[in-house]
Length: 344
Image (cartoon, rainbow, N blue to C red; front, side, top):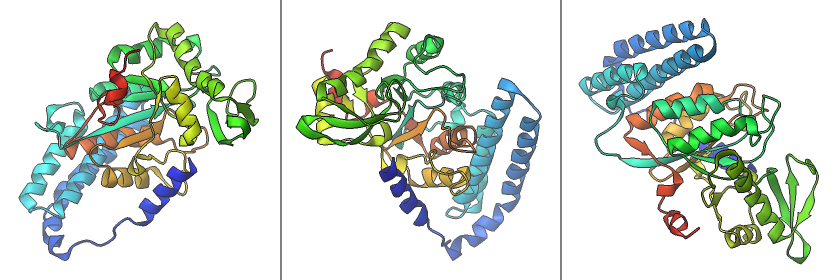
């Protein structure tokens, strides 16, 4: 993911820092509204900290929505008359209380964002599913057989109910290679060298023929059928996003199209939370995402101290909805329509 991380570093470094002088009066006029929203956010956060389990997650999500809406209202005031900014702030307050409400949904979408989630530690699996359901959003998941915080693996029978539920909800689901095989380089005689993250060869460089590489992609589908009775969608994502023409051709030969992500769509959840705190990553995503962008995050990252999803997923979705964006699976992405129309 080094290339994606480098793009993110550049994007963050280029964040604009200049505010137009002629917007100062309008911003000042909405200070009281912003303070009220901030007070509401702080109160909701304090309440959330006193709760446990699902109730705590729901309260934290509400607080995050209020905080994100307050930020959006403050930003809007810099470019709009005070009266308009007050209207935005009022709508934002309601949005925090009911994220799935019509106030967050515009009558016509100004663009579409494609949310995608790769398996990981699975620490955020329940939160992601709950958040998508409350917002009535369909996303795309890419699965590898990764070790989870429960001590099992994400494609073990213990995860059958979780994946069956995602299928029933209408999400798209693709392969992330069975053992999370990160490409090292192309090898000799047409082979590819990969470093599996899990399985019998975890942490070692191994050589695979194109056919064997294809089997690593298809193994996820075979296990998924065992767990859910359904096949994967004909898409895959290379671990760390690393591909070569050889691996792309191998996957295409067995029916899978590769899906990367937009430069603006890199969530940054694999970066250090000390150097790149959640608030900075959220600001970057809300600022840079555009119509048609594919966004990527993980269902839990072992190395990040402050997990991305609990703080950022709710306000990211709420903020994008406030901007008029809608969401869809990759089945509806114009670049992949022909792939989904191919006979299975």
